[in-house]
Length: 113
Image 1 (cartoon, one colour):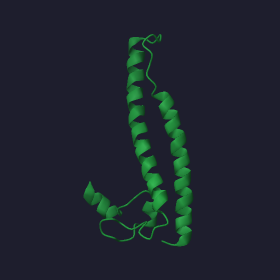
Image 2: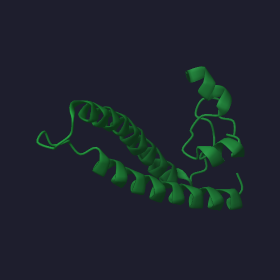
Image 3: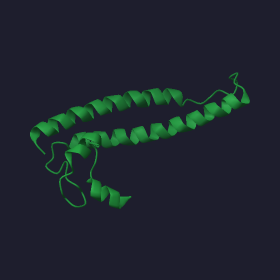
């Protein structure tokens, strides 16, 4: 990976982190408990609870990705950044642009699943 590619990835990771932090803040507001004395009907309450469940799932996934992105940012200057932890080949730049927190190449990642 060239120095320019690392700079581009660093900028992308930093932007992704900012976006995720904003998303997490919004989701945390949306997942606050629904007050039982709120004047919602039974169906509306069930819909709100279902939406809350979905938002909790997205919130958990966002927090996990945020942690992985922060870890990637801390490793970006290391020599092994962008190298697959399984086969030790370089992870394709296309994959790194989409998921800069990747630690496995596409072939090894599909073998893990």
